[in-house]
Image 1 (cartoon, helix red, strand yellow):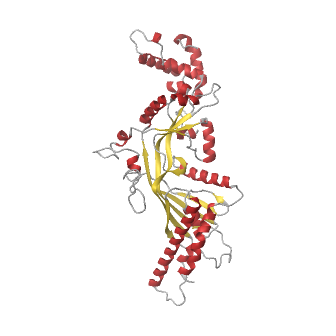
Image 2 (image 1 turned 120 degrees about the horizontal axis):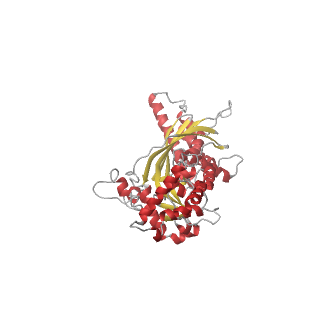
Length: 455
């Protein structure tokens, strides 16, 4: 049978196989399968010190504010279980004003200014489409590059994934191999990043919180301390414009079981028709025809995945390379999509006031180095001590001293006491860390009467 005739049936069946491959069989329920895909993919991204976004989307940017309604220890459990935290409770979007200073000496033009993120995401105008494909060209091209390592994975049709990736290339590649098992790798390419510094964004967040204090007050801590809410603010996002997937057949084939079964990538090793001589020209023509046939299958299978509901927006799938036991596919996202972020969390204190910024990644990784305030103290002793330091009363301000002078003086008293106790923490830790409750109470018991700390 000739190459063109052989490929017709494969093109017709590739779409069916690709859709079927999306439903990874086994005993697990469909919900469990979807959760496994999410978790495995997010573990991959998390290994690069980036907090995963799932599903991947365009619509996340620095300055986005989310309400996190579970304690940090519960966040850790959810994070480990699912590999990501849902960003579904958006309560605000701050427009960062720190881009100019942050990028002014590197990625911003010397003459003129840019409006971020718009001028990097949509450089030719919001909603403007400039080429025949209906896309906004040069999207993200001016943003700083970022490189991710390549990841290895294995996949079995009917037994789930040991590492799942939410891209069309995996099920389509598996169907082209007509294999029940494959090993492979994925490369996140054309990756870009955009971010802003925490200090400037935290200042803006404080102003935003003051305007919305009545709303945030609804999420103040409970008196028993069993409910703590946070706001999460995105400081940096990571986008990808292309993912390359390579699959190699890893099935254990029993002798004779697959004899005569048409296999897509076998088109690259076809037999010449009996009447045709084996010449270099004929071999080249045969190879070219085979690659074209497989490319058509990829296009047909990709269309089938689209019809079934593709995983990522704006993706287009094409064949990169193929052999008898391997296939490589490129999936392009135009415009690029966000796959991860960095940010910080602030506890919502009494009356809707916000605590200091705590790195989100540190909150979710309890084994990281100490020195970061992960659990913000909200008990009465913490509030009493913070008010004594930061809110001196009018009666305490005398002999030409300002409120700031009194605050510095009291900070010094805290430092002296900590040094006398040989504590391995700072005065700011004593004021804010939840795990130093006994030390705070000890200071109040010892020094409260002398320093006029009201009980």
